[in-house]
Length: 124
Image 1 (cartoon, rainbow, N blue to C red):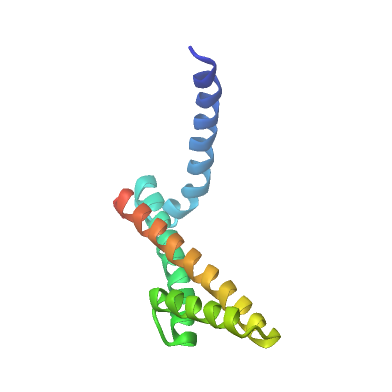
Image 2: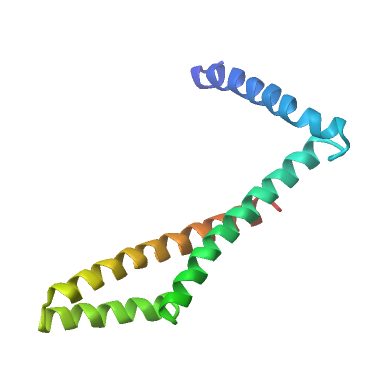
C-alpha cells in the first residue's frame, strides 16, 4: 500500500462516518428517504444558492450601470482614456470605484460559471 493510500483511507472512512452522522436525523424524520438522496438534494440546494448569490451581484451591477459587463469594460477603457487626456482627482476616484465594481463583476461571472459547471458535472 502506498503512503498516499494509507493516509487517504482513514480520511475517507472518517468522512463517510461524519456524513452518515449528519444525514441520519434527516432520514429519521422522513425529510429524505436515503443518504444518497439527502446528499444530492443538499448539494443541489447549496449550489443553486451560490448561483443565485452571484446572479444577484451581476444583476445589481447591470442595474447600477445600465449595461452588460462587456459594455462596462468598454466604458471603463473610454474613461481611462479620458483620464489620460484630462486628469482630475474626481475622475480618478470615480474610475477607481468603477474598477472595483468591474473586478466584483468579473469575479461574480467567473464564480457563477464555475458553480453552473459543477452543477452539470455533479448531475444536479
